[in-house]
Image (cartoon, rainbow, N blue to C red; front, side):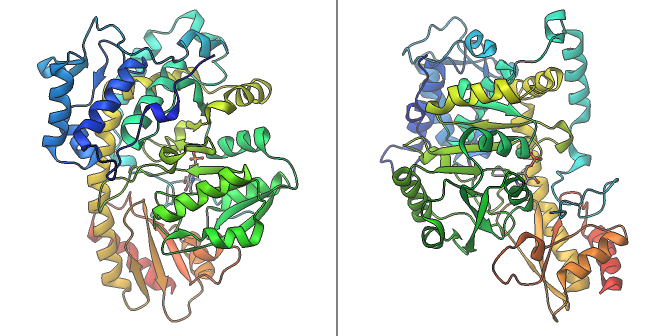
Amino acid sequence: MTVAKSNDFPPLDPNAGVPFYRQIYDRFRAAIASGLLKPGDRIPSARALTKELGLARGTIESAYSLLAAEGYIESHGQAGTVVTPGLSTLTPVPVPALQQISNAAEVSFRPDSILPFQMGLPALDAFPRKIWARLGAGCVRAMQPSDMVHPPIYGLPALRTEIATYLQVSRGIGCSPSQVFITSGYRHTIELIADTLLKAGDHVWLEDPGYPPTREIFRHMQITTVPVRVDQDGMVISDGLKAAHGAVAAVVTPAHQSPLGMSLILPRRLALLDWAAKSKSWIIEDDYDGEYRYVSRPLPALKSLDRNGRVLYSGTFSKVLFPGLRLAYLVVPEDLVERFEHISQTLAGGSPELTQAIVTAFIKEGHFARHIQRMRKLYAQRRKATAIGLETVLGKHMSIASQPGGMHLILQLKNQHSDRLLSARMRESGLYAEALADWTMLSEAPAALLVNFTNIGSQSVAEHLAKRILQLI
Ligand SMILES: Cc1ncc(COP(=O)(O)O)c(C=O)c1O
């Protein structure tokens, strides 16, 4: 089986010596040539892509004009821009046909209801539920008996294709649909990786502080976790090398470190990739909310720099759509596809086909890209309003750290208050917060609370909630 190589689809690279419009043009051409984009498929509007990539409108328009002039795409007015119907594939980059792939610690507190500041939730009031209902009804109506059998183990082929296209255009990742495995969430993704590539006793680097479920899963599997310090530039790779040079894997959140929010700088990305290539180790990139960055355009994924096939990319729909979906995805290096297929055949049951069909339609009709753009704007507003509201009431007791991306704020406590104690009190009184101490293994973390801002509608709501916190201090 031949598949498209990741370097067939280069990421946008400011140092490439090739102008951005040309890089965008090349990406679309490659996507069309490989069959990821098919004649008649809609592509994002120039306006939407301008926002998505954070480039000048003229750059996108130049790329689109060139594609149109060469007959790859055509504008259908109100109906959008599509890959030219009837276009024959131009450069035969072999991608597997769809038929081929279709056959084939107690810190995780989960309240019963939605609490103010609850971590991990997108803006639930802003989800386009009417559109979702329309698409859902359409998918149910279109259901055939053949859709009622067990779902394809690696995921719905159409969804795998949409994800591969999205990752190529938005995150700079070149992959074929056969490299994309649909999972039921991040934990499932990590389990699948561990079942396929790791064994009890192996050492894995984890960022410290870092997302607690990752270490809980590895501990459960008797895999030794090695905490590696994080500073203002992300994971300190030299510390990891000193602590466990021979580790089998490293888990990182390069776009937006979870929970501190900095991004992993380029020299460290390269050092990490170099270590993985030389020691034949794996890098697990947890890109849980890389889409949400408010100060500049989203950074390309670490996976986009992976020339040696060492990075496993973990994405999720929990933040960009909603966590109740239980849909996430894993992109594996080409050489590992067969091993992951084999393990999935043994251990996975597949994800509900109907849910996958609705997500596929949501992406295909352009709602996904639009929703991300709308949320980026809304979150920038809510982040600011929440920070000002909290600062106004609680400024004497805590300082609020502004991060370039993500969905939560870090409230650093002054006056030696305990973050564990305050977060416990908040939960008892119907508010949500997580203590940074619970996300930390080694280092002395400053006392700080993690609070989500995406569901705080205004500054006055934030002030009202802040007054409730003040009573608990
Ligand atoms: C660091 C991190 N990784 C991954 C996830 C995604 O988890 P899931 O796909 O299980 O919702 C989250 C969600 O909160 C997260 O914070």
